[in-house]
Length: 362
Image (cartoon, rainbow, N blue to C red; front, side, top):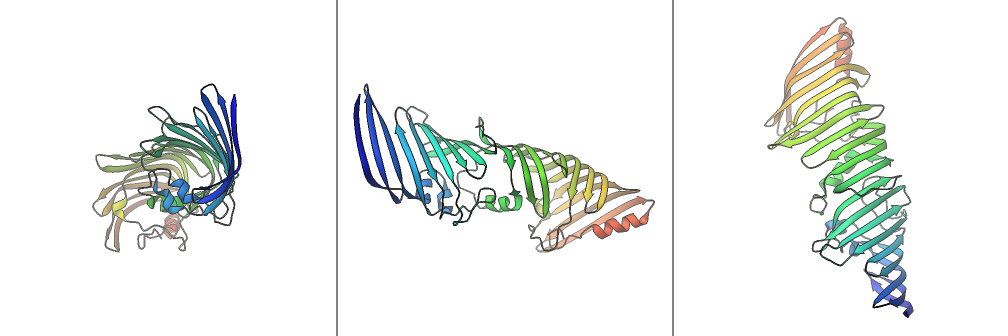
């Protein structure tokens, strides 16, 4: 076997610089080349190697240490703490520039043949790991991925798989971030498969602890199962023939009327799909409601409440009505029938029930 080596080399690399050493060994007609290096690089230039616009939202120079092994396949490792790099993502993936996040990355590239692919495994010191498969068509593009919180991620046949126990997820933060990501090359990676438990789920003024979420999400359909102390049951959303429908069949659900200081999204009746919701036990603030059923139909810039019925202790409610909006002006009209043996119950619920003001549900 023949050998060749080079030590204490230096090079420019992805906008930074570094030192490296090379060891080559010939076996038969082929060479095995190993490169060890350490240095700095710019994150936006590293991400520019992928077919995604994410590089435009990430910047900063980071220190790295890595290796490259070139045989019939190409494998590599890289370690970094991403100090001085801000990650503008919602929890649990974001961080400020002055906070380190240690990442260990290893990859293997089948770079020859008709279907080149690159498999990358990423482990963090924040109790999450990720595995990604990229394909070259013609540039490297994310094909499928998995993220595990406290568990080894399993790469799905297609789409993205999330599993394990996540520390905190704020749906409003993620909604805001996702609306800014159009065109980043991620929108065609479906389905999103969920098998997670969230220790702290924040959702538009609501807070739920230890909530299990399982199911699938695509642009055309959501089908989810929830299991936790405050929420249990099934819910979904689908789009058929340009019509949107949402449904829920819940054993229990807790909803707290939001504080006036909570920044809720501006609601428009024209944004609502047709609804068919059933909750066996609904806790609305301090009120306990049973057999809560809501059926609505969208109509231009309005929502028709076809049926809203529920039981409250010794009272039975039946409500119909309409909620509409023109410009910034909201209008609503409802008819309520109440069969009660205790009128004070009606007054208590009316007191707890916020009137829609400015489309923000307060």
